[in-house]
Image 1 (cartoon, one colour):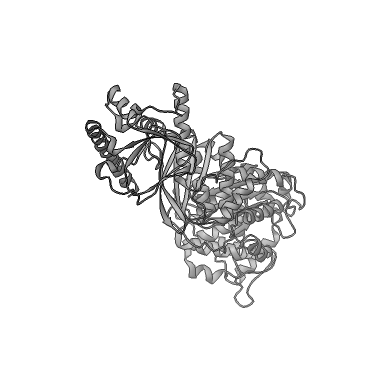
Image 2 (tube, rainbow, N blue to C red; image 1 turned 90 degrees about the horizontal axis):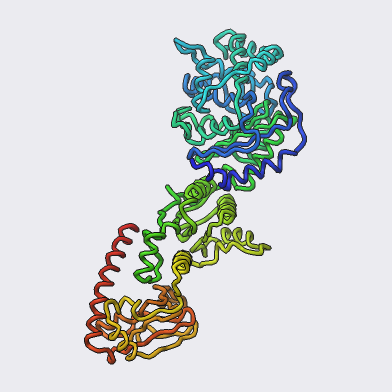
Length: 612
């Protein structure tokens, strides 16, 4: 993945800003019931996000190691499901929220079964269900499983393990109770020691984000492609995380944040937004329920700012929000160009990139699109985003695209969104960015994509002509395609037989249905060819400028006009009446017209093939 693209990406920028805002947040205490945990620096704050596309974003102390503690419970629960199956695991461990602290002795009165696998009693029972392989120990299997999730080998922090073992008398008591009820089928000391070791595995916030991304990606590590958990068990793990993963704050968590998550007293939180990303946060100070104070705030802010609550209903979906992408070397605007301009656009049109989007834009899809656009940043100077097939955007995608616009502006690139009339919230969010700015970005300046593309083409052409010393404000008849191959004498005769006409901007030159009696060579200014689309609206067919001609098709039949033509700017045209044309000049023009339209048909055929 392009490192610069990640640095410029709106998600990366957001995480860095969030880290900056919360780094000074106070409150909470570092866990002390395990003495070794008190060595953690309370100022540490690491944030990491990994998408199901494998994109990694990090801020702050995201690579600072700490012990995973209770977050390990979600991973070993998945491993136990793979080893024993759902029915066997449910016979030993329930799935009901306890509403009590993580170290509570929450056992069913008759069976002795722990209420869920996310409290200590349930986690010890779950650890006891992990099968030892013939050639390895249960701990080796646990470490191998964690390595599949993180994509790298992990280690156990021996000092924390010894500290937990020396002080873990309550957990030993729980293990003996479980053994007495028949929940454990191996000696309690052996299983509780295994539990202490799994809680002492060293991870980082980035590791937690990758682990979460595996669960978000249906059990597959999005970076390595390795299956971390069989897909049929992913929903079971996420379900228990949703209802029980944050101890006796689980209900408040679902209400305020709305993502499956698991916290640990080491200061970590692993959260998952299925189908989109995994989130890892690390900050040692804990609240009274054992959850990271800053970690909770990070997750709340992300959920609020980007509308990431699991129960936010998407109105529509799309297999891919990028319908197609192309540049102006492949497909130009509807404006008719001279041969020289078309040659220039064929050579430099790659500097204008067009993205056509479709469907509903949510956080994950908008982030992926923004990153792709930023990855090609060095290849283009102008970016046009066609939104006409986008049915809706959410708050997250609006924020992502607003930040994308700021990043492109900072890099000296031009960005335009076309065909956004149906996206009220999107337009409102982008317009807010313009308020109070001395030089607004103008992202919504053009109503439709074609006009935006045309403007970008004009910038390329103007820059090239200025560099070559060409005055594009006026043109001679020899620059007209109809006059190709004419001698100076023929050009003089043609000019002498015409009359120069001046049209103020907005003037209707002729209307569809009128009798066609002449053609017009544009000497300066621009005209627009358009048709009435009903309800008082008109649709542009093309825009023509100096060196162009209009009304010439009537040379073939002199029937009535098929479209309206208006002066887009103040324009000067040479009108040539058909009845004043010499036969030799008429013949020359018809030959040139046939050649021009043959090339045009070929160009349009390639366009139709690309669109198809």
